[in-house]
Image (tube, rainbow, N blue to C red):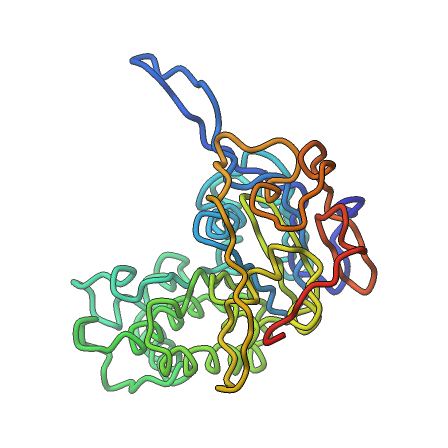
Amino acid sequence: MSGDTTALQSDEILRVSGLKKYFPITKGFLKRVIGHVKAVDDVSFHIKKGETFGLVGESGCGKTTIGRTILRAIPPTGGEILFRREDKVLEVSKLDRRELRTAWRDMQLIFQDPYSSLNPRMTVLSIISEPLICNKIASGQALRNRVMELMEIVGLDKRQLERYPHAFSGGQRQRIGIARALATNPSFIVCDEAVSALDVSVQAQILNLLMELQNKLGLSYLFISHDLGVIRHISDRVGVMYVGRIAELGPSHEIYSSPLHPYTEALLSAVPVPNPRAKAERIVLEGDVANPAKLPEGCYFHPRCRYCKERCKEEHPDLRDMGNGRFVACHFAEDLSLRSVGN
């Protein structure tokens, strides 16, 4: 975020500043580096305590990479990640292995696929209790009691403790994954496409569960999804990503009612409207998504933008503060009159 301070404010739990993640491209027997895939390129945002920040964009735009970099599942190439743990502010990218293990108690991840993220050879008791055992939080009967408590919290029958994952539906498996994420009493959870593998009716149940848990436990979420309907339902603020960068950022209701970036407008035109009489025009983006290993000059979106001008081809736009918490990376945002959902 242009001009953004790196200090963590009192109402914030996380602040990401200038985050970068480049993957090297190698060639030959000696693995000589000949370039980089810029999966995440200078991304900045913050998340407040008790808030859900939605990250949305096409597949391959860098959403998941951001989530895993924040948790240090993969190391960042550059930038700063500040996280509030109790009364301390941690610089996540500089923590050693021991300090990171301690920080992970407060930073957890809910995976996308409830089928592959659970070990089929472990019972529900073993799956949920694993983080408690690894962090030496509970043992014996206290461990078993804590697992049963977690199962009740996420809406599962505690009599199913000794069952294996194959005995549960997709929605129930995701509840097991949520219970596992809650085991260490975290304050911040990354939800990586947490409902995309589920049926629509089950998606609603899981989303409502996440919102209930947030209100009850005071959780903060980074919610990653390609589904704008899901993001709209659960998010307080939204960041729209395109090829490793944030194109637009702001309060959810304002993003959906008055988009400022042409890419956001195109995404919103694809959102289904529950009105059979509505005749919304779908904006079809021409061309292909920019190659993060060989990015175009100027604005990354200009080859697909129907409002493109000569300046867009030569100068890359910074993420500018438009007031009222709105930020946009577009040279001509003030001059455009973009359509919202259903218009």
